[in-house]
Length: 454
Image (cartoon, rainbow, N blue to C red; front, side, top):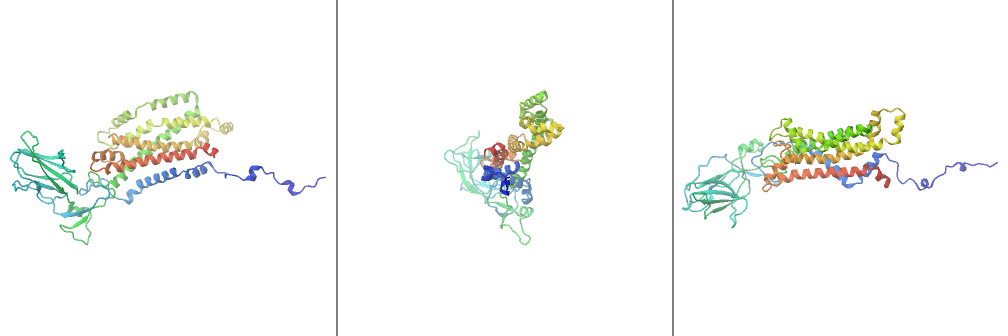
């Protein structure tokens, strides 16, 4: 009889157990999160998306400025421009001066953002005069700039300019004309440096005067702060970008969530039922894909009574939800067709599981990764559609701000105030890029096949 010892009952260890487990056992979502964190571009994009959401939600609380409030002392100011202004008297009408003194084109008084007053001498060959203003010096090509006024009266030898004056250098030209309006030789040009000014009433209305300081005419004061400048109406760009973010992200996130939710339900039903019902449902999805988006956008605006110049936010949401769901439905249907052939689905059926339970408990959770990726790719597409429609005047209309409508307004002043176009365009580009990179990272992190290859 053989004597057995305790060593004879030790478990047999395989070579894999002796070498140790190379990778700890992790859940699907835990492993996806670890692999997402390893993707630096995706993590950077995630923080960027969080920053955009904070900019949209928390930003207006921190920077509590009315986006519709106009600062007429700072119109079209770029970011970082000076805010110092001299306090002057209220504007008084100017009767002009027509007496020739013989000193050429000159200023009647100091040039300010309130008014630039010119006077000049009469030319015997002139029937009248045309006044121009330019932001560039007049060269030999005689590019005088924009015409401000025209007089067919050689006794009117003065002019007052109050058109959108900014604290910068201008070049004024007075050109004689004949009876038919033809420009004659002998034009006069003057360089004018405009000083920013304000009035005591404006200072008090904006709350710029401290209680213990008595401001007087001739004193200097810092005007209201606008970190990102102002637009062509003197509205704060930072406040308008925050307000525009609420509109753009509401459409860009709300619409994809709605049409993706509908696409999930539609695609899961079609994929699970299969057969003729599946064919009919997917042919209807193909029909929806063929519908022109812009045409239906116009029809929805007419149907909802949205007139010219009015914001079409609701018609845009309806058009996106009705026409953009087929892609999600196709994707979810394909996933459901694969999952329903799995063994655990057959076992659940044998145990008496109903259709609703199979779809909600087994099938849809297994398509959640694909759905998350779809959402992250659908959001930038919706944001771009909103920006494009607002840019061409079919989406959000002024004065309601959105990044697209702000770009549409900014392109009109691109040469003189480029920041009005650049700032909303940068936010659109950064948002679209962030969501695309995040979606790409989620796709890699949630793909189980990549885990098996590691």
